[in-house]
Amino acid sequence: MRCQQVQKYLSAYFDGMSSPGETKYVESHLQSCASCRRELEKINQAVQVLGQLEEMEVPAGFLEELHIRLIRDKVEPWSASDYERYGRRGWTVALVSIIALGLGIWVATLIPYQDVVANINKLPQVIVQNHKR
Ligand SMILES: [Zn+2]
Image (cartoon, rainbow, N blue to C red; front, top):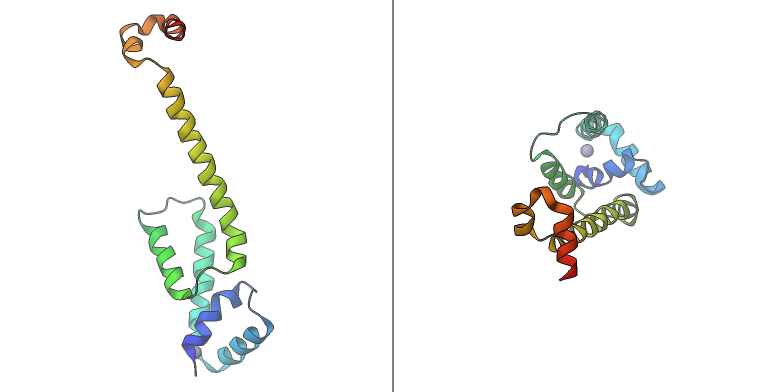
C-alpha cells in the first residue's frame, strides 16, 4: 500500500482537517496497515506531550528540531489554514518587538551617557540641561 501517501495526510487527518476524500483514503488504509496505525499513534503521543510542554522547560534546540521534522514530514509548504493559525500571531509578535527595539534605541540616543555616568546623582538636571543645548 502507499504508506508515504497516507502519512502525508496523517497529521491533517488527526487534526480533522483532511478532506472527506483524504479521510476515507486514510481510514481505509489504516484498517489494513499496522505501520501507519503506529504512525498515527505517534502523532497522538506527540500532541499529548506538546500539550504538557507549555508548563515545562523546553530543552535547547528542541523546537527547532521539531519544526524541521514537521516541515520534512509534511513535505508541502504551509497551507492557508496553517498561515491563519500561526502567521498572524507571529507577525504581531515581530511587529511589537521591532517597535520596542526602535523605541529603545530612540530613547537611548536622548540620554547623554557620559554626563549621566559623571552626574549619576543629578540625573534629572542633566537631561534637562541636555535638552536646552
Ligand atoms: Zn501504511
